[in-house]
Amino acid sequence: MPLLDMKLKRLQDLRKRRPQFAEIYDFHSGLCTFLQQHPCQWLSVSADLSQWEPRRKAGFPLLTGDALQIKVEPAGKFITTLAEQLIKLGQQGKDELHRIVQAQKAETLPIEKLLIACLEKDRAPLEACATKLEIPSALLEYVCSTSLGYGLQSWIEAQGRPVYSDWKEGYCPICGGTPSMGELAGDEGKKMLHCSICASDWSVTRLKCTYCGNEETDSLEYFTAEGEAGYRVDICRKCSGYLKVVDSRELGAGLPMDVEDLNTLHLDLMAQKEGFVKGKRDRKA
Image 1 (cartoon, rainbow, N blue to C red):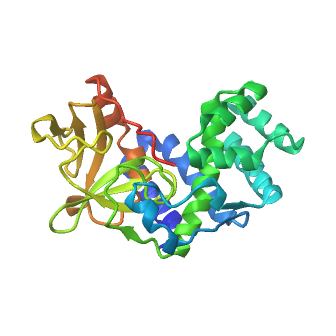
Image 2: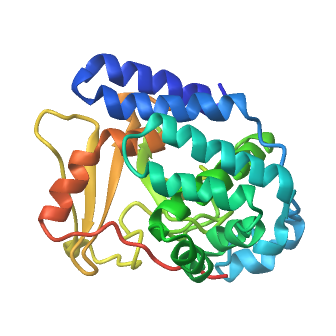
Image 3: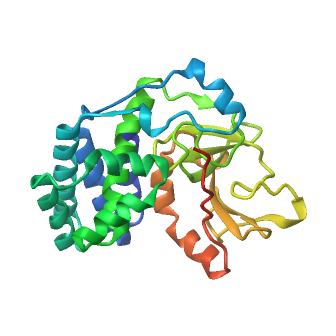
């Protein structure tokens, strides 16, 4: 099943179970429906897997900005349409989103530069553009990273959504993104990470901090929320990082992890209340 179909199915199921959060689920369902109706025809990726081996061994992800082949005009139209859809779906940030739309229509939004900055985790171009538009840089980054992520996810799906088992870093082997969630999968509970940007999956050492690489078992722990089987939060007392984890042996395989991330926001609050942070480790370039 295509990833967007999986997301919509899960969101609809969650809305029935938790009607008090209907507004949140409806927003993301609307976003998924929009993406279904606007196939990515503005991004292609030039990546030679046969040339990746030396970089992989050194801990470098596959993609660099040079690998992105962006058709600027269609990409700009997509981002404009996405921003307009977010205005319809959301309750906040409408004026700021309108400024993004106006800048793109005036051809003053550096589309290619911003999308590459999202891939390379270079916030300087995003912050500079946001300052010029007088909007929060986080909002501009959200619009651009959502667009980039959708383009990369379309490319990943075309590759058959491979799982990378020979990559042990805490960041994505394809785009260098941080994981949205972890998963304990299979009969043996192999630990998988799921990229927050391109939705790639890769397996990692179970008893190891995703962010700092700590393997000292006495400082690696986890906690659960009462009455919520199948979810846990891995914590590292060495770097104070945390990662939410789904146990698919209890909840079933094939859940879209970014929806599970949305569904477990209360676990973020619990972890943050205890002083833990969802660590962000800068990946190698």
